Length: 201
Image (cartoon, rainbow, N blue to C red; front, top):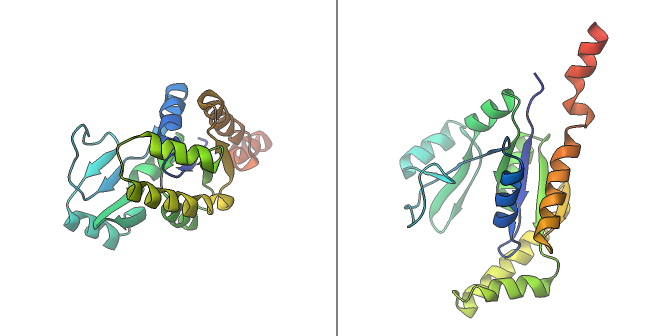
């Protein structure tokens, strides 16, 4: 059986990464999504096991000690990370998996799994990014400025990714993302078993 591939998706706040992902999963129903573990309390509207598994701090630290995570970080005093076992099980079964992760987590995953394909979602311009961040109308200017500075820090890391998807037109961005998934299936490293099978016949 040909192993599945792990894909990483990253992008700053305001890039529209979550919307792109939602559309990609509609187009690619066989693509699995990695559910993160997190120690903060569940927020209204969130569902256990949909995007996050909400666990205790003690359990998370146990996972760190037992090397059960592909990556982990601390944000506002809470741990969050990507459990290793579900990812490995998925790709061993021949299914591709997408992991949403920030730039720090992406570095950790690439160190452990150099074969991963990383995709960074960019806004078309700084002006558009500012407009998207201010257009929400829910954050104070101080919060917007902080988000913008963090976005610029993340965008500076985009050069370390395998592919860039610019989210200017949503439908085009989704088409571009799906094209990356499709073309990757033809890479030599994903077809070694097929080559050997033919040669061994």
